[in-house]
Length: 200
Image (tube, rainbow, N blue to C red):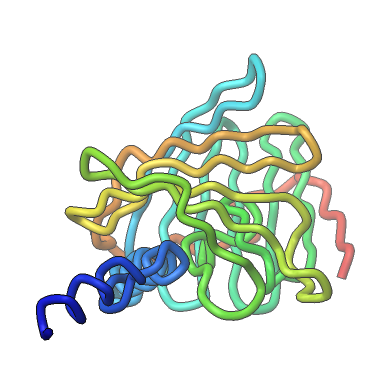
């Protein structure tokens, strides 16, 4: 009798992790890995159509410093400084703390926990899992979907695929490591002669 009950339970999926549960488990592992580091560095490559550029960023607490091509971005919990060295301009704006876009708010780039996104496990094979995140209506999360590829052995991100109404951006993560030194901060004196545009 017990054998039949066990077989019925297995057939019904009792005792197994659902696809939604597994997606949440992967996202929790991903976020926990970043939270465990006091500061960290990420090297990446961004691809959008014919555009390709290498970048990196470092995070410590709510502060970050990002470099992509000739551009530099510095931010904290309130203010974001975008430096365009070609145009010799510094744009100052408020921080969008709800954004999970790696270029807009790297502090939360891999924190998809909570009620803002619906998570769906697309695949899990060969030591990699792909989870698609769709913003929940009314959540305030950025429009568009994000597919994150995670190594299930290390719970580290390998790739992000953003789709904003057909506009696709891919970010390939090359390296994640603890922060090696102090976090670079915005220093106005470095940009003497630049035009400052303040949108706050």
